Structures are given as C-alpha cells and as structure tokens.
Image (cartoon, rainbow, N blue to C red; front, side, top):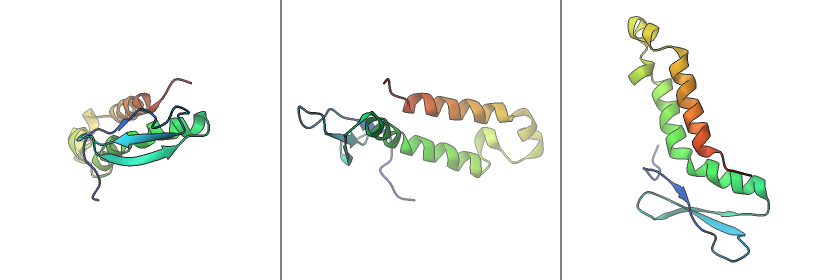
Length: 98
C-alpha cells in the first residue's frame, strides 16, 4: 500500500472558527483537511493522524514479524500481552482531551 510515510500531525485550524484543520505528513506536506463541526470530528482528525502508525502495527502483527513471530518457540515468549501493549500505546496517542 502506498501512502505518506512517517508521523502525521494535526495542524492548527485554517480559520478563527476552527472549522477546518489540516493533517500534515512528516515532511509538512498536507495529507488531509478535516471539517470540524463538533468534538467527535476533532477526535476523528487525531485518529486519522495515527493512521500510518496503526497500519504499520497491524501489518507487523498480521505478518507475524518481529515480536509477533509465528515461530512457535519465539511466539511463546512474545505473548498476547505484547500485542495488547502495542495497541494500548497506539490508542493512547490517538486520544484527545475533550
């Protein structure tokens, strides 16, 4: 899958009302604009900014790579707890204060 690699960040609103906010890639190129009408849409923008990180985590898990090796001996020591911690860390970065 081809997408803008690197960390994405939610930028400052384009207008004083805060109704449109950009999402920037690591090179500061704009990857999306989100129209904000309520707090849920603001939270959605922050979730979208975590998309590359979440995609890479899911890809690593699904392919059985790294700590999620499909080798029975390696996998036995790399328990589901590792996957839970990875998911929790990604979710924590996606959460925004309300």
